[in-house]
Image: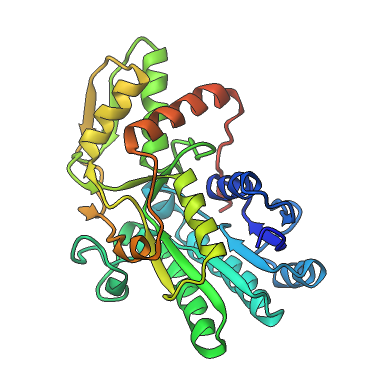
Amino acid sequence: MSNSKIYIAGHTGMVGSAVLRQLKAQGYRNIITRSSSELDLRNQAEVRSFMDQEQPDVIVLAAARVGGILANDRYPFQFIYDNLAIQNNVIHAAHSLQVPKLVFLGSSCIYPKHADQPLREESLLTGPLEPTNQWYAVAKIAGIKLCEALRKQYGRDYVALMPTNLYGPRDNFDLETSHVVPAMIRKFHEAKENGHQPVELWGTGSPRREFLYVEDLARAILFAVEEDLDAPMYNVGTGKDLPIRDLAEMVQDIVGHRGAINWDTSKPDGTPRKLLDVSRIHAAGWHHRKELAAGLADTYRWFVDHEDQLKELKLET
């Protein structure tokens, strides 16, 4: 498998860059990458021409329009359209060219807002979605079903991985579009740098969330590349969660911020709880390695080392 030609769609992002590091560390050398400026995955003709030229053996589809609650609420059209376009173009080209293997990256937000916890793969499409990220979730559900349809109808070895909340090096630390961990890291760090000012966080702090270090997800993706997995979809997480309030205190301690935390209860909490049932991927042979405190410390060190280089994720309107 190490001789396979692997295309990583989205290699500059947090997940894609982690996959690239993991593949190189495991001896893979025939790796194809294109930045968004070199290849617009929303453009069907560009994608098909690229695939015709490169003829990959494996595709890791990590490219996506991503963001937190605020970004999803503010840019619903971009979140549903861009993700549908990217997925449709890449997966259709892969099928047309009979690419043997494809790993599609989804998200735990695909599950119904009030589905039984922990969330099992079978919970998909059993109830209403969380309204604040429904646009992104609908697109990802379509991608899952596209892979599943090709698997069922044509026997394609296309598998979808559903990671829980991710964090780690190369995360998006833009406060307008980021997820909870990078937003907390930046807020606490900047408050510390400004004399330990109070930090304001959204909601009540009561929702429970599960977090996975991005390098562990990269290992899961490599696992899916190298193994013949029986099911079309697998949850990927730690199987452990904690209240957002506890996460905030953990990040505050790691950053070294000594000011107050003020919770803005006028802001939405989002889904009350999101914990994945990871028994299916455990049974297949994959387990996470990095625990939360160690992963947060690693992420904060990366943030400090790269603070002057951080990109701000801006969405076109």
